[in-house]
Image (cartoon, rainbow, N blue to C red):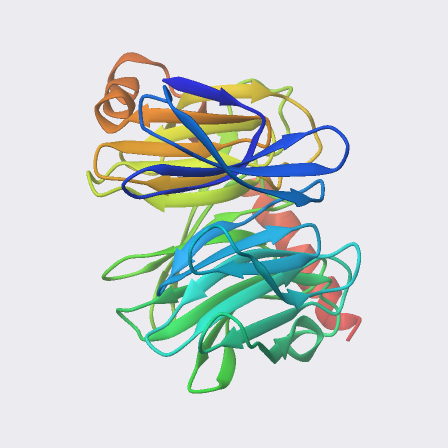
Length: 332
């Protein structure tokens, strides 16, 4: 593992692009190689937080505080979208026709769409989906089902929706809350962000079937393990970034997760975790550091370490979840 300090967001392809933070409300876009031996400063931005750095179509997109910036060449950047002061653009997705951006923060939060990355339109708000929800959590596109999938919370019952042909429908109504979504050929995977279950993954087999894997940290002092990011790598290895504890974990089977990096045990959710995959490497950010792993290194971790996150039956949590659902339905 290689480490680069003070990195908030990352994008990888032929090289690594990353946003680094410094004092005095300043963010810097850098480009570096996979040995981290050569660092080139490309642009600086006035701001303190960046949660998104990606390329879609031929456009680079970057979030700085409550603004979304776009560039064709990494040198000239234009502000293309601005949300309310304390909110952020947290995730994007790309369909064959559009780029989709998801707002997070104080309600109402919005899903925006754009055909070119520069002109954006409001598509849907979280309170249109569920008036009791606070915000959207995540957005992704499934080419297999030609649909967008989004998650939302907190304290509401509609937790996940499918968006297709400008209409939406709920696909999960219940106690388990999610943040990250990742898609595969046969199912849609949802990483839990629950205050009832200790942690876990929801597996959706369209159109209506669900299965849940409940996960808990082996050290009982850690009560909850909400996921912030979840991906399946091209070597069939699963990788997740937890919001708390601040950790990067890998798994072969979704039931046993091994620690690739544990940064801290703060109970405050870490929004800065990003995972970007390249042919040989996986780059992860924690808000403090960029962690660069070789895929073979991650495979070895699953073979040589004890799992720190393992599945459990969750009998009591399921009863609590039923109580939560009944209470919310009665209070409608």
